[in-house]
Image 1 (cartoon, each protein chain N blue to C red):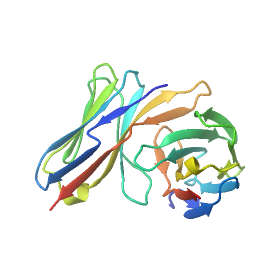
Image 2: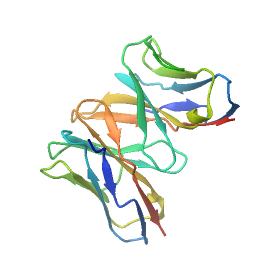
Image 3: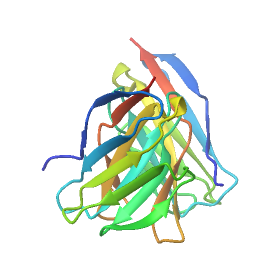
Length: 114
Length: 110
């Protein structure tokens, strides 16, 4: 069974601070995605990283895929209250039935205080 | 275009009962996946269907079943409900490997 561990589980910071969320696995994934989920809603895709060592930037968010494609990080610069939410990483693997299966981490609940 | 829709939004059932959850994918998406998200955890993969055929199954008991219809909508059925089945059930549709999630159905088993 492929597992993804996220840390920290909870994070509460002040507006303007920087933060990093980590996603680690003992398994290799073909690609990895980061989602953000707000209460009462489904997860919304932020980014997909495919190549080992890849770095993608989305405004104040920077995503990195580890060289061995087993780990990833999400760095937020100058966090804002609107960044509050549950951040989920998800590894993509191909099942025996050719399904692209997502394995989610347990999530990091981020609260940005004004 | 409308996003993924799920019904009902909330549902309360008693242990031992059966439940059917419904999902309509984004127009043009032929693949539907179901996930269970227990409070405080990330979603767990239950099933994926593509063109009405099961393409993948997660580690869930046989009480869980699903099907996909010719219009690509899908149903998730759970029999003999247990208290531990209480969760948010998410449906996601996709055309390639980007999945788009619906708002979920909150199931409470008492």
